[in-house]
Image 1 (cartoon, rainbow, N blue to C red):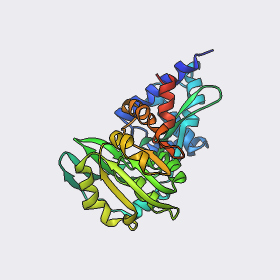
Image 2 (cartoon, one colour):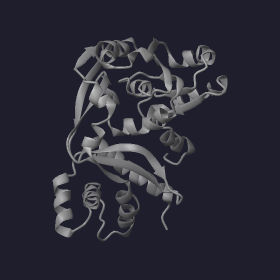
Image 3 (cartoon, rainbow, N blue to C red):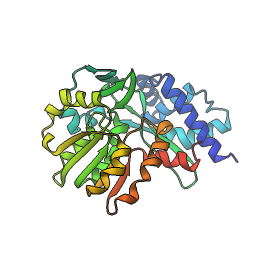
Image 4 (spheres, rainbow, N blue to C red):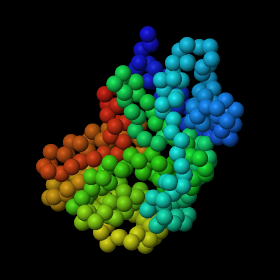
Length: 294
């Protein structure tokens, strides 16, 4: 009997190494050939190749076979690039490479078969926690904004999928902390039931990139107001007076810097009774706070 928490940590470590070092190592054409030769599902064949790159012996090692069956097979998702390209932001906003200060707006590419995180982890009743790993069936171009060469926001499926709960809940007066590529602001503003979207962003260069490149392309830009301010100052002194219906916070890169900021922002919820607060990557952040992933 293995320790499930240790199994979880083992798989997350393997995936972190793989995604950071060589996320395009698995050949989609090889997976398709294996699937065809052995009459198996393509994603299952892809999982076999992924396991091999992670140095798992799924033929003779019983523990590795368990990890493959319990994690690698269910965590993988084959995704169609054409379906995601139909998103209104992709069709309406064309990115031109621009630089303001140490910020850069550009287009990047996922290769067919390149792996990426596509959603918050899923915790099963057994206690096993599955990372959600996707790959596209063809190349996929997406916009990105970087600071000092470090990606701050990339409009990959993980961003669109994990933002969707906040978009679904948006109505009336909406407030969001963090501008990025203005994806949430635009998609929320497109909803007829949303009256206004207020964006709080502390970096003037990001705001300038938005003003110069993105804002002129937005059909509902009159519903979006961008305010230059610190998120926590605004949350403490101004937000309580504005009667927002929904507040969405997205001011962190990932759990490494998100846990502290998430907990700090939650401390302001009591100031706004009747407001719904939603946080980007909340499911992931809660797993780290609970100790399940550390």
